[in-house]
Image (cartoon, rainbow, N blue to C red; front, side, top):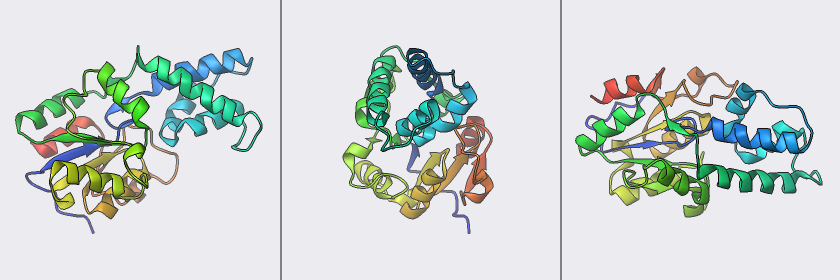
Amino acid sequence: MSKVFPSPAKAVLFDLDGTLLDTAADFADVVQQMTVQAARPAIEFMAIHKTVSNGARALVELAFEIQPGHPDFEERFETLLSLYAQRILTTKATLYPGMDTLLLQLEKAGIPWGIVTNKPERFSRPLLESLGLSTRCSTLICPDHVSQSKPHPEPLLLACKQLNINPQDAIYVGDHPRDIDAGRAAGMYTIAVRYGYLPDTPPVEQWQADLVVESVEHIRQRLA
Protein backbone atom coordinates (compact mmCIF):
# COMPACT_ATOMS: atom_id res chain seq x y z
CA MET A 1 0.00 0.00 0.00
CA SER A 2 1.41 3.39 -1.03
CA LYS A 3 2.14 6.01 1.60
CA VAL A 4 0.41 9.36 1.63
CA PHE A 5 2.46 12.04 -0.07
CA PRO A 6 3.93 14.26 2.67
CA SER A 7 2.50 17.73 2.19
CA PRO A 8 4.40 19.78 2.83
CA ALA A 9 7.52 17.65 2.70
CA LYS A 10 10.12 18.50 5.33
CA ALA A 11 13.00 17.42 3.05
CA VAL A 12 13.69 15.84 -0.32
CA LEU A 13 16.63 13.45 -0.59
CA PHE A 14 18.12 12.21 -3.85
CA ASP A 15 20.31 9.39 -4.99
CA LEU A 16 23.27 10.90 -6.85
CA ASP A 17 24.23 9.06 -10.06
CA GLY A 18 21.24 8.58 -12.34
CA THR A 19 18.84 10.60 -10.19
CA LEU A 20 20.26 14.04 -9.40
CA LEU A 21 23.16 13.95 -11.87
CA ASP A 22 23.81 12.33 -15.21
CA THR A 23 27.40 11.15 -14.68
CA ALA A 24 27.56 8.49 -17.39
CA ALA A 25 29.75 10.57 -19.71
CA ASP A 26 32.57 10.68 -17.17
CA PHE A 27 32.49 6.93 -16.67
CA ALA A 28 32.31 6.36 -20.42
CA ASP A 29 35.44 8.45 -20.92
CA VAL A 30 37.31 6.48 -18.27
CA VAL A 31 36.21 3.10 -19.58
CA GLN A 32 37.10 4.15 -23.13
CA GLN A 33 40.57 5.24 -21.98
CA MET A 34 41.15 1.92 -20.23
CA THR A 35 39.94 -0.25 -23.11
CA VAL A 36 42.11 1.67 -25.60
CA GLN A 37 45.17 1.23 -23.39
CA ALA A 38 44.42 -2.49 -23.07
CA ALA A 39 43.75 -2.87 -26.82
CA ARG A 40 40.25 -4.13 -26.07
CA PRO A 41 37.03 -3.44 -27.99
CA ALA A 42 35.21 -0.24 -27.13
CA ILE A 43 32.14 -0.58 -24.93
CA GLU A 44 28.87 0.88 -26.18
CA PHE A 45 27.74 3.96 -24.28
CA MET A 46 24.32 2.51 -23.44
CA ALA A 47 25.94 -0.54 -21.87
CA ILE A 48 27.95 1.77 -19.62
CA HIS A 49 24.83 3.84 -18.95
CA LYS A 50 22.99 0.77 -17.66
CA THR A 51 25.94 -0.30 -15.50
CA VAL A 52 26.87 2.97 -13.76
CA SER A 53 24.45 2.48 -10.86
CA ASN A 54 26.08 -0.84 -10.02
CA GLY A 55 29.41 0.84 -9.30
CA ALA A 56 33.02 0.75 -10.44
CA ARG A 57 33.47 -2.98 -9.98
CA ALA A 58 30.59 -3.66 -12.34
CA LEU A 59 32.21 -1.38 -14.92
CA VAL A 60 35.45 -3.37 -14.68
CA GLU A 61 33.47 -6.57 -15.23
CA LEU A 62 31.74 -5.02 -18.24
CA ALA A 63 34.90 -3.61 -19.85
CA PHE A 64 37.26 -6.54 -19.25
CA GLU A 65 34.92 -9.52 -18.87
CA ILE A 66 36.56 -10.56 -15.61
CA GLN A 67 35.12 -11.18 -12.17
CA PRO A 68 36.36 -10.22 -8.70
CA GLY A 69 39.06 -12.71 -7.79
CA HIS A 70 40.65 -12.59 -11.23
CA PRO A 71 44.39 -11.76 -10.94
CA ASP A 72 43.93 -8.49 -12.86
CA PHE A 73 40.68 -7.38 -11.28
CA GLU A 74 41.90 -5.26 -8.37
CA GLU A 75 44.51 -3.48 -10.49
CA ARG A 76 41.86 -2.62 -13.10
CA PHE A 77 39.49 -1.49 -10.36
CA GLU A 78 42.05 0.82 -8.74
CA THR A 79 43.02 2.24 -12.13
CA LEU A 80 39.40 3.03 -12.92
CA LEU A 81 38.96 4.81 -9.58
CA SER A 82 42.15 6.80 -10.08
CA LEU A 83 41.16 7.90 -13.57
CA TYR A 84 37.67 8.79 -12.41
CA ALA A 85 39.03 10.93 -9.57
CA GLN A 86 40.99 12.91 -12.16
CA ARG A 87 38.00 13.10 -14.49
CA ILE A 88 35.82 14.71 -11.83
CA LEU A 89 38.01 17.82 -11.86
CA THR A 90 36.77 18.61 -15.37
CA THR A 91 33.52 16.69 -15.13
CA LYS A 92 31.01 16.33 -17.93
CA ALA A 93 28.31 15.48 -15.39
CA THR A 94 25.18 17.61 -15.47
CA LEU A 95 22.00 18.02 -13.50
CA TYR A 96 19.14 16.26 -15.23
CA PRO A 97 16.84 18.53 -17.26
CA GLY A 98 14.61 20.50 -14.92
CA MET A 99 16.55 19.53 -11.80
CA ASP A 100 17.99 22.98 -11.13
CA THR A 101 14.47 24.43 -11.36
CA LEU A 102 13.28 21.83 -8.85
CA LEU A 103 16.16 22.54 -6.46
CA LEU A 104 15.52 26.29 -6.67
CA GLN A 105 11.84 25.65 -5.97
CA LEU A 106 12.73 23.67 -2.86
CA GLU A 107 15.23 26.29 -1.70
CA LYS A 108 12.70 29.09 -2.20
CA ALA A 109 10.15 27.14 -0.15
CA GLY A 110 12.67 26.56 2.63
CA ILE A 111 12.65 22.79 2.07
CA PRO A 112 16.16 21.33 2.48
CA TRP A 113 17.39 18.88 -0.10
CA GLY A 114 20.21 16.41 0.25
CA ILE A 115 21.96 13.42 -1.22
CA VAL A 116 22.16 9.84 0.00
CA THR A 117 24.47 7.80 -2.22
CA ASN A 118 26.57 4.66 -2.29
CA LYS A 119 29.30 6.67 -4.00
CA PRO A 120 32.28 7.25 -1.65
CA GLU A 121 32.78 10.76 -0.32
CA ARG A 122 36.16 11.15 -2.04
CA PHE A 123 34.27 11.19 -5.35
CA SER A 124 30.90 12.62 -4.31
CA ARG A 125 32.08 15.79 -2.60
CA PRO A 126 34.57 16.93 -5.31
CA LEU A 127 31.90 16.23 -7.92
CA LEU A 128 29.40 18.47 -6.14
CA GLU A 129 32.06 21.13 -5.69
CA SER A 130 32.91 21.01 -9.40
CA LEU A 131 29.26 21.68 -10.21
CA GLY A 132 28.72 24.37 -7.57
CA LEU A 133 26.24 22.25 -5.63
CA SER A 134 28.11 21.55 -2.40
CA THR A 135 26.96 24.73 -0.64
CA ARG A 136 23.35 24.20 -1.70
CA CYS A 137 23.13 20.58 -0.54
CA SER A 138 21.93 20.38 3.09
CA THR A 139 23.28 16.89 3.74
CA LEU A 140 25.52 14.42 1.92
CA ILE A 141 25.54 10.85 3.20
CA CYS A 142 28.05 8.44 1.67
CA PRO A 143 29.13 4.90 2.62
CA ASP A 144 31.99 6.49 4.61
CA HIS A 145 29.45 7.83 7.12
CA VAL A 146 27.56 4.64 7.97
CA SER A 147 28.15 0.99 8.82
CA GLN A 148 25.70 -0.26 6.17
CA SER A 149 24.97 1.22 2.73
CA LYS A 150 21.74 1.14 0.74
CA PRO A 151 19.55 -0.88 0.48
CA HIS A 152 19.87 -0.70 4.27
CA PRO A 153 17.96 2.32 5.63
CA GLU A 154 20.82 3.52 7.87
CA PRO A 155 22.09 6.20 5.43
CA LEU A 156 18.62 7.68 4.99
CA LEU A 157 17.93 7.65 8.70
CA LEU A 158 21.24 9.44 9.30
CA ALA A 159 20.30 12.11 6.75
CA CYS A 160 17.00 12.72 8.53
CA LYS A 161 18.78 12.90 11.87
CA GLN A 162 21.15 15.53 10.50
CA LEU A 163 18.19 17.52 9.15
CA ASN A 164 16.28 17.04 12.41
CA ILE A 165 13.17 15.66 10.71
CA ASN A 166 11.10 12.50 10.93
CA PRO A 167 11.67 10.07 8.04
CA GLN A 168 7.90 9.93 7.47
CA ASP A 169 8.04 13.63 6.50
CA ALA A 170 10.77 13.12 3.89
CA ILE A 171 10.84 12.02 0.27
CA TYR A 172 13.55 9.86 -1.27
CA VAL A 173 14.08 9.85 -5.03
CA GLY A 174 16.08 7.11 -6.77
CA ASP A 175 16.68 5.19 -9.97
CA HIS A 176 17.44 1.71 -8.60
CA PRO A 177 15.50 -0.90 -6.60
CA ARG A 178 17.97 -0.54 -3.70
CA ASP A 179 17.01 3.14 -3.44
CA ILE A 180 13.35 2.29 -3.11
CA ASP A 181 14.07 -0.58 -0.71
CA ALA A 182 16.10 1.76 1.50
CA GLY A 183 13.48 4.49 1.41
CA ARG A 184 10.66 2.10 2.23
CA ALA A 185 12.64 0.55 5.08
CA ALA A 186 13.28 4.03 6.48
CA GLY A 187 9.57 4.86 6.34
CA MET A 188 9.91 7.54 3.67
CA TYR A 189 7.74 8.36 0.69
CA THR A 190 9.62 6.96 -2.32
CA ILE A 191 9.79 8.16 -5.91
CA ALA A 192 11.33 6.06 -8.69
CA VAL A 193 12.53 7.89 -11.80
CA ARG A 194 12.37 6.35 -15.26
CA TYR A 195 15.01 8.69 -16.69
CA GLY A 196 17.98 7.29 -14.72
CA TYR A 197 20.25 4.27 -14.99
CA LEU A 198 17.50 1.71 -14.57
CA PRO A 199 18.53 -1.96 -14.57
CA ASP A 200 16.88 -4.25 -17.13
CA THR A 201 15.19 -6.22 -14.39
CA PRO A 202 13.05 -5.99 -12.41
CA PRO A 203 10.86 -3.43 -14.21
CA VAL A 204 10.34 -0.21 -12.30
CA GLU A 205 6.67 -1.04 -11.75
CA GLN A 206 7.76 -3.89 -9.49
CA TRP A 207 9.99 -1.80 -7.20
CA GLN A 208 7.03 -0.89 -4.96
CA ALA A 209 7.81 2.81 -5.10
CA ASP A 210 5.03 5.11 -3.93
CA LEU A 211 5.31 7.07 -7.18
CA VAL A 212 6.97 6.47 -10.54
CA VAL A 213 7.79 9.52 -12.68
CA GLU A 214 8.91 10.02 -16.24
CA SER A 215 10.84 13.24 -15.66
CA VAL A 216 12.05 15.75 -13.09
CA GLU A 217 9.19 18.02 -14.13
CA HIS A 218 6.72 15.47 -12.79
CA ILE A 219 8.43 15.64 -9.39
CA ARG A 220 8.37 19.44 -9.48
CA GLN A 221 4.66 19.51 -10.28
CA ARG A 222 3.94 17.08 -7.46
CA LEU A 223 5.78 19.30 -4.98
CA ALA A 224 4.27 22.56 -6.22
